Image (tube, one colour):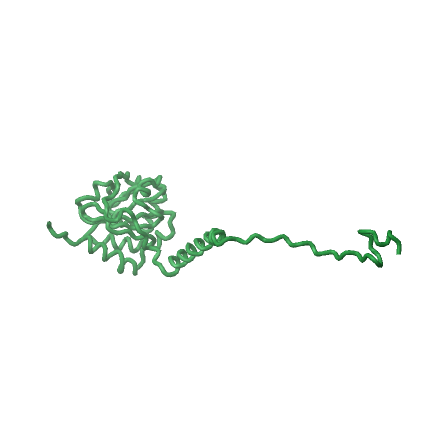
Length: 222
């Protein structure tokens, strides 16, 4: 054996090759508890909102929508008459804030000719119009006068007054979410009830009429 055979770094019978060690794996930093909470929070919030949406969709009543105007006076507004609308030879008037105060209970129905559910509920609005204990006003929402007149000519006009809200600004002041919607306004000009969506036989009997009857009752004198 020569010195060359045993020199450091030289492999051979007297100097076996060193074993190669596996490369060390990079250590994964451990995520702190706070970090896991931060990551999980959006998922928890999303799941909660999704659950609330599904509950409202399948278990809640879509017509029960809270309104900031309940118990308050109707907003200040003035709506012109629907152009060209005539009933019994007389022009059907528009209406304003003052027309809803001190003249009895008024049902205000928000409708439009382009609204398919409005056609479905119209027979129930006509039934309301036959009750002479209160008035029924129509708020024609974002509609054209010609189309609105054709709608009433085809399905009947149950309204004592029809205001044309062509740009929808008054509807915004009333807190309208969509069409149709129906409000009950008491003799003092306060909004006491709001129904969202089309009326049907059940909602008319179980929800709207009881609220109208309540508004019709004389208030106790103080």
